[in-house]
Structure formats: structure tokens, C-alpha cells
Amino acid sequence: MRVGPILVALLPALLLGSARAWAYRPFNGTDADVAELHDVELEIGPVGYLREGSRGALVAPSLIANWGFASDVELVVEGRQQKTGPSVASEWTILLPETGERRFGAEAAAIVSMRWPALTLHANGNVAYTRERTLGLFGGLIVEGPAAWAVRPVAEAFVDRESATVTEWSGLAGAIWRCRESLSLDAAGRLSWIRAPGAAARAVELRAGLTWAFSIG
Image 1 (cartoon, rainbow, N blue to C red):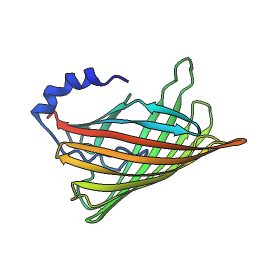
Image 2 (tube, rainbow, N blue to C red; image 1 turned 90 degrees about the horizontal axis):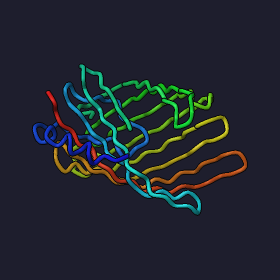
Image 3 (tube, one colour; image 1 turned 30 degrees about the vertical axis):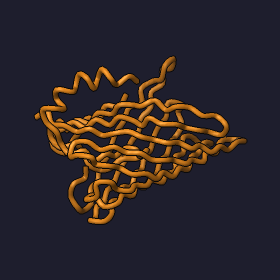
């Protein structure tokens, strides 16, 4: 996906106002918070390198936009938990047909987040009815270091069962640098084990990206 023209078009808005960018990249899971009213968060990435077995490939970046269009509700287009205490959220997704296909799918996710001064946890659970008419399950946990730190260490572990026969176990470790209130940069490494019928594979991935937040209200 080419994101250059999109960023150029949004640059005036970015310069007019900014919000806090908490950065829930580079994870596969997410947090239970939503964008504040009239705030927009752009997540760009991950761009990186993925190696599965003996084959290596570059990972092209994607763009995710989160818009807080109503109180406690956000619109997410894909192409901050600021207080202590628990936070619970849900996400509902329609999986559009891939190129050359006509089948739809759907996903439902539940996220529970908890923040303490020295630690933040995000637990993710996801159930999917895939385009291949199979049941998909995802469970993961994200751990973050102190939110007050400019550079905080992060880690994630998850299990992803894409069908009745394919399962992935993955672990990630990295860091998020909040270089200013509206901009956070992230980098991480991920190691995965994938089991499929008659075969098993290991994948290594390096990730990098950013989260940029601003207000349109």
C-alpha cells in the first residue's frame, strides 16, 4: 500500500492540532481503549523483514486510521489508555472477499486492559468465521513497561488457530519510544512456530512503525 499521498494530504491537519499517541503497534493484538472524541490516530507499519524457513521477504507497511467520532466509540479503517484501572472493549469486523473470491467472513474480539504505574497488560480474545467457512480462534497477552518512561519495553505472546489444522504460536519483544506527545515510534522482533498438516515451520520477523495522533475538533 502506498501511504505517501495520504500523508501529504493529511499534513495540514497534523500541523494544526495534536493528541497523545500511545502506539499499539507493533503488536498483533490491541488495547481496550478508543480514540478520544474528535481525535484521529494513524498507525503506519509494520515495515520489516520476515523469514519463514529458508525464504525471506520484505513486509510492506499498512495504514490503520482510528477516528473518535462519538464518545467511547471509534471508527477503524485498516487498508491510549491514559488512566489506571481496568478497561474493556469489543471489536466487530466484516472480512471482505479477497481478490478473485466472493466469500465474506466476520470477526468478534474482546479486549481487557489494566494499567498500574509500573505495568500495563492487555488481554485479547478473538473468534472468526473465515472466508473459507472455518472457525478461527486467537488469544494473546501484551505486557508494557511504565507508561511514564519515554522508551518503554514491550512484549507479546499469542496463539492463533486459523483453521482446524493450522496453528501459530508467537512471541514478540521490542520497545516503543514516545518522542513527543503526538508521535510514537516502535521496533520489535517476532519469533513464530507454525504447525500445519504434515509440516511445521519457524518464522522470524523484524518490525518497525509509528503512530501519529492529531485532533480534528
